[in-house]
Amino acid sequence: MADETKLEKMRKLKEMGSDPYPYSYGQSHHASEIADNFEKLEGKEASIAGRVMRFRGMGKLFFFDILDGSGKIQVLARSGTASDRAIDILKLTDIGDILGIKGKVIKSDRGEKSIEAKEITMLAKSLLFLPEKFHGLSDTEVRYRKRYLDLMMNPDVRKVFRTRAKVIKYIRDFLDAKGYLEVETPILQSVYGGANAKPFITHHNALDTDLYLRIADELYLKRLIIGGMERVYEFCKDFRNEDIDSTHNPEFTMLEFYQAYGDYNTFMDMTEEMLSGLVKSLFGSFDVTYQGERILFKAPFKRIYYTEEIKKLSGIDIREMDDKEAAKIAEKEGLKVKVKNNYHVADALFDKYVLPNIKDPTFAVDYPAYMCPLTKDNRKDKRLSERFELFACGKELVNVYSELTDPIEQRRKFEAQAMEKKRGDEEMPPVDEDFLEAIEYGMPPTAGFGMGIDRLVMLLTDNVSIKEVLLFPSVRPEQKKVEKRKA
Image (cartoon, rainbow, N blue to C red; front, side, top):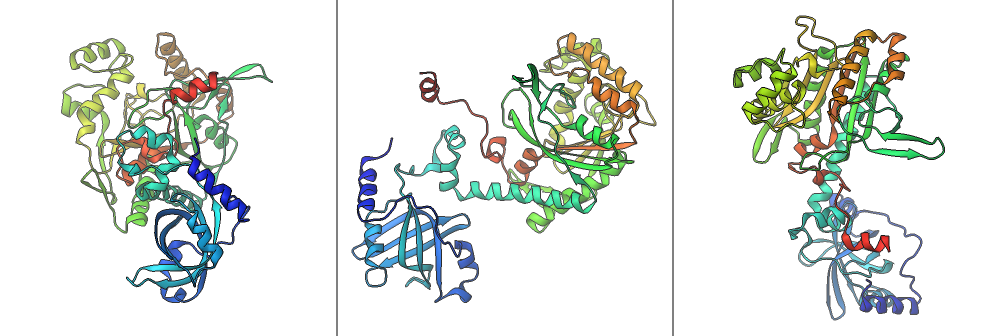
């Protein structure tokens, strides 16, 4: 609820003819521009705007900090220099208000870069108190639920999301320079696919049909390859109806791109080039510090072979493991898997024995064929598939295939997935007949790439929780607000 004292100050502002919520303001500079170009701007006039974050009045002299989109700058106002109206507005100002300041760029008596105010305009009267020591709260869900407060009070949080924006821009520029076309594919799909996950379901009233929020955009991007668009990419929002933990959020951002006439070898070199270049552009070197560990993103990245590494560390050969054998191994190894089939057990064995040993970027190459229904068999060993994943510091970052282009084989693998679904594996997708029809027209040899943007940003910003790199992560609704809506 609005604070009564603040409401009274708002009424007084209106009485003196100052609209506490005006339409616009002429902002000529940001705080960082003044700090970075101080020698050129000193003594000149500037107009800034932002939120009051510190406020101190000493008789006829006021000091306060203004926070704008670029950072903070000190403002000082004194009677005789500032207008009488400006002083009157300051007397009704609280921490949290948004002000417009017009004045001269100066250094204070203590040498701090500042604005000496002449005119002050109230741009938004805050009716609630900002929290004290907000970033020290132990209830992190409050930070996620009220991200606007988190952004106001914590400069490190703002830095994370600026870094995220730089990551996406770098990758977009990188792909554009290589002749890729950015596209958009449907979020609402009549048949979901392209990954193993449980979907969210909704209903379209006009069509009177159930639709699914996409779990991946893979099959639509492949349709574009079939249609002759040889290099395509998409930054896509995907949705998976799964548990929420430190590395999973129901809504997340993926990058997928596909290139006709390439294979997984094509993308191994390209992955190294893109990620090492990204790290160098962000930090000036190939080093990333994550949870006290130094991670080196300098190419070439290390390569290990998926099945060989599991066998070396566990003694288990998973290349021809069937579901019956997988169930026995799961029991013996104490693996916590949703379904005790070969797919899930192989994944769990890798997580148990191999993943904890990976620190620097490492390609895990040539997965068992039974784990890869959308991938070509390895040309040297049909028990394996031409797939690699990139891991760093225990996180999966990239997934790449030599895409399966044989429509007969693709149908067989889709139908095998459908059988697993009938046996109780809810993460297996249904058969996509429209995609099978599309691929029957002929799909060129194709390399496919997928990368979770959120996990990459976690690594590059030294965060262990995915919620720290999502502006509005999924959180449990506040009970009072739920009850109010129901009423």
